[in-house]
Amino acid sequence: MNSIVTLTAPTRPWLVESVYPLRYISPNDALDLGRLLVEAPSLPRPASPSNLSGWIDATFAILSGQHGTLLDGCSFVVEGRGGILAAVLIVAQAGQPQLIELAVSAFYQRQGLGTALVGAALDALHSAHYPQVAATVAADSAHARLLTNCGFTSTGSGE
Image 1 (cartoon, one colour):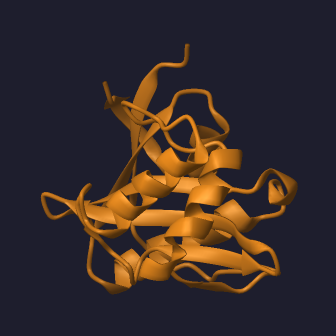
Image 2: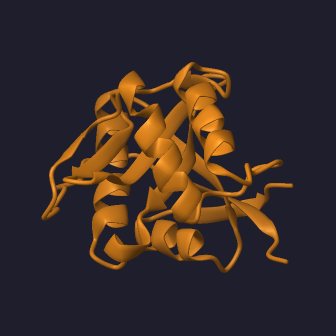
């Protein structure tokens, strides 16, 4: 099993390039986010849901602030004709931004959507005067590689 690590990155201006338009997260996105998270790999959490209703409940919990204050101006989705294709969710925990979800639909992976979402989040956090952001990921995972390519570095074990 992969070990868990915490990665951090300084926030900074980022020119976001994406074929698909990005938009801010909305409280109305919970159902589509649940559908995305049931099919796409998500960041590690103590008790990952095992079915669609569990992921929808988990998404409602994030959007309602149960995991920290949702930074909705720093959290983004990419929407296509069939719903949400990708998402990055940022919350403030003890006043510090934490990237708690990053997912891209399997069909749309390796097309730059994850990089665009992370870049948009880093740019928005910089504009909001947050100096850095953290994420807890499985070591040697696709999430860890993507975040490292976006400037995140390891700060040690997350658990």
